[in-house]
Image 1 (cartoon, one colour):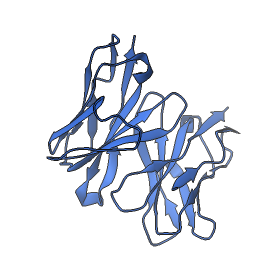
Image 2: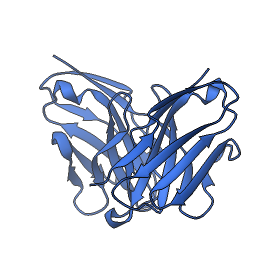
Image 3: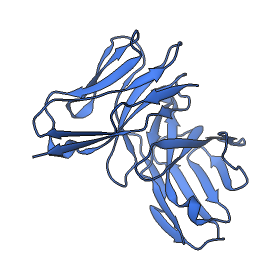
Length: 116
Length: 113
């Protein structure tokens, strides 16, 4: 199997606070993980590519100081939304690339962030 | 710029009817193509993928898709849909194996009894 989990599944935070979202590959090692953002009724937009042991690569228009990504181990990547604002409310989905499956991406269940 | 276009934002269909969800991509180079399904408030599940070889790809839940290089299309089909197929479907393309995915806008499939 190739299971990816995210924690928490949903979170509500106050404007100005920071929130951390975890993405774990439960039964495989992933040197590369991806973070996506999805607004209601819209597609997934890639935010950044996270490589274990190195700095994340952010897509154009994504503020790296606001969306901090850490990929400290082969099974865990974290996304921290710093100084969150209501416009950061969204569905955040991660994926992990499984090397022995040609780096096919396996997706987590997503985290619903609501900033009040 | 590289892009994926899903021509239909919503597709209503009756149960047991056939369905086709359309996907076109822009590229002059080799691509890897994917179809994912997303149920409400959940992540994405891979339905099928085209990496190379046979242009007709069979996936899970009775879905299949055909890669047409000349028309740069990768349409998804199912001969007989079920109520449980109601979900959002995303077409995606990657320009290298294991590389980042570019998603289409999504098609909402609504199966009615």
